[in-house]
Image (cartoon, rainbow, N blue to C red; front, side):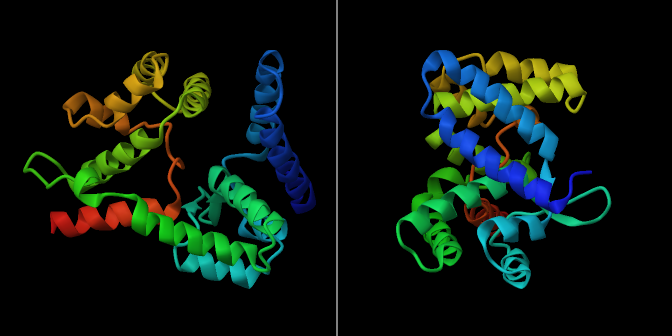
Amino acid sequence: MPSQSELTEALAALVRMRRLESQVADDLREDVVEAREFVERTIGPTIRASVLASLLGVSRPAIKAWLDRGEIATVSTPAGRREVPLTEAISLIEAVDAARRAGNERPIARVIRDRREEARTSADLDRLVPPKPRTHRTPELQALAYHRAVAERLDERMVANARRKMQRWRDSGRVHPRWADAWLELLSRPAASVAAAVAADSPAARELRQTSPFAGALTEQERRRLADAVERRSG
């Protein structure tokens, strides 16, 4: 298992590779993407909060406080530890780097505030959150609202990343081939077609969303706001 310093260095390299990915010529981009995905697999799907604290330049108690308040997404590992999804960590690191370059003295606090405000103002809950019919369970409605929000910002890069993720999941056996193949077929279409499919309120779409590769596409603040709105409407 990599040491904390090795993980910190790998994550820093990953951020640089993601920045390079958007800058290189088209004929070189695929090589950069493959290298970036190799580093992601090497790091693993989650990182410890202490590693994230080191990269963000804040104390462990500060990170723990944001985790406890639900401002940063977490998952439970098989060993029972609370860790941060890699996608969430990278998103935070990039946002904090941008805030720091803009001259913010407390960049992580600024990013958290901006996320909270964007979640409050960006989503039209009446459009995204449907009333609960008898045939829907609350988790299904939460997934529908989430994917409707994803659909509104979906672009070709997001579709390509989701397609590569689903292919890795299929190769590793993480997703049943039936659902992996259905997703891969869908993700071979233009972004507009993918957006319409993932936002559809149909039995087929509900089943497909159970194995979605779009986890992490929204901030934790946006996800929680949608989930809370569905809970209130379903109550």
